Picture 1 (spheres, rainbow over the protein chains, first blue to last red):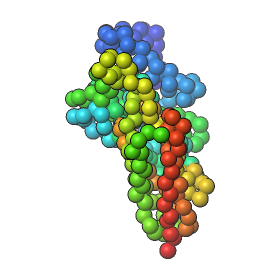
Picture 2: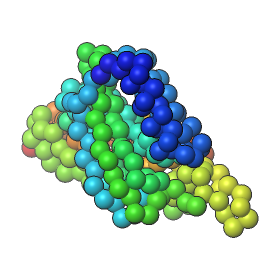
Picture 3: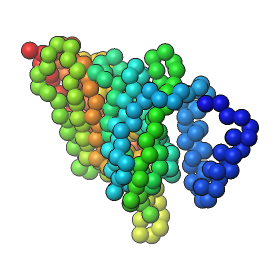
Picture 4: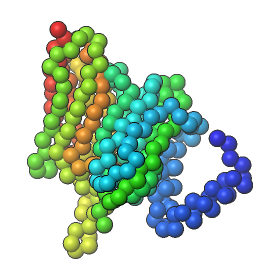
Length: 140
Length: 109
């Protein structure tokens, strides 16, 4: 997805309006930074990664999440709205039966769960799922 | 070492050669995120399991890098290819340096 200057500015303004809290804004930036660190700045294509998560999670302390991506060597999972966005990075070895894994994660509030897959050919793909959280799972 | 850490693994006892089997692992651990505060208002220090690996006869199946957003009692479900009779080794690495192990033997009939 190519963004021109005007669209980028509009996106930035929208994001700033939504995330009134400066702490949240900083956390979101870190999520993007983590993606950049994982991909090494390479382009990420949309699709090719399936993130399975409930639409509504009553308890943010334990939200079942499954990720899968055909031909992926590694999948990084991020919770973009958490104080620390990193969740887990799955690296699949030669003995892996499927390029898929599921686990249970904590979500601080309603947010997108993003998965970035590193493919065997060195390209990167992205998938996401939005989870509505009734009670957050990070204390406080 | 944190108290009451007990790994549990569910793996089939037998498999066909080359079959992909589903493995389910659970380990009891508080996974203190480092975000919570105690009654005094001071932060409870982070104490989590930061890495989990599964190997079959020395071949890496999955290597998971874990962050504080993984829930209490970390649970993982994934698949492994079983080419021949052998042992699945599961290893969890704690922040405090402890290492927890479990192993399951899978027989190819």
